[in-house]
Length: 471
Image 1 (cartoon, rainbow, N blue to C red):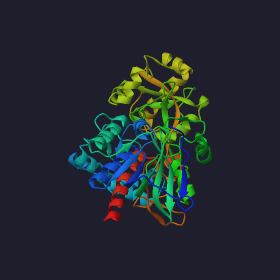
Image 2 (cartoon, one colour):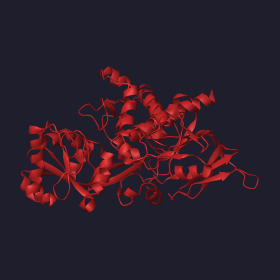
Image 3 (cartoon, rainbow, N blue to C red):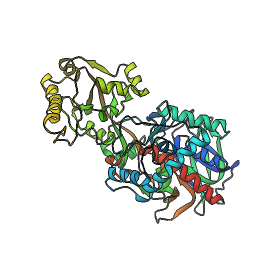
Image 4 (cartoon, rainbow, N blue to C red):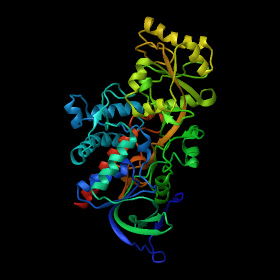
């Protein structure tokens, strides 16, 4: 499929729009947002079609762990987990230091529970809650996942369900034109893999086409601190929604927000679960020294790691943490490909890091001191340790990576795209990476799971809004 060159086309007598067919709702992008939106539309007997540029739908979700934060779900109730929309909003707001959009915070926090419940009740999604530890910034256990606990499994389930319901998911179909007339979206233009071009009219258009993290020019413009970082997201993050929005005169918001990750294993190119850090592990640089509070969040950790000599660090953890992490399929893969190394003593560990044995012993010894005399508090970083790190040791070399962006088209609480004057387009919606998220305007505002929160909650809100207009 060719590289996208998105443009807005105005219908006019000299350049008339001549569709070959009509679709009630056209959805751009067959990631988690696009596919879940299609399922919710199907529940409301609304015809839709999903257009995907790739041969096989995957999106950013397939590269994630597939964990979705949600309060007040049926599953939480069954497990007697005391949660609320208000508490979730407070956690989101605390992480972003109050810099996020408060309207979307409440809209997403209110919609995500019903969205996951609908997928459970109407489509058989057998959610589980990760209750072994709390992800950074969350007050209670609210991370939902399928039993396989991978983003690939989540995408496979969404795609399988769409296929079983006969929802058209048209792959190798690059949407690169939005047609407009009198400030209303009237259709789309599609480039097929065989070089053929097709046009479809539509009553509503939902943009679920990812963010801009794969567009190096936009990354340099909006998040220059990540311009040299490894991009470990999906190539579909080409900024199409941003470029369309600029042409349409839409408001863009929070373009400085993104999800990074501070534990991208090198040279293996695989993500290390941050459960390692939350369950007692730490990060050291090439000098064998810690350099940040690892429990603050994995997104901002990417920037901290990239600041270290050579832009690298080592995740160090013990046997107990190793055994806990083995529950994650991604970690098992890391073991199989040799990314995780085991050491019986500090001498061999320091050789792997290429630092002095004295340095790594001082780092590990400081934790013991803090536990003995300061209730585990490291006064330099603010981290509180609950246990020492004892031999045997495990370590993996990592760098900071860019996953996806959290800024995009500004939307209201109906997921309608807003113009610069604050007025919403009547029939243009955005969800997931195409839309503004709830992480504020910086890397440190990303609360664990915010990406899939925007994808699933935004998709549900868009489907409900389209249903309201239809009625």
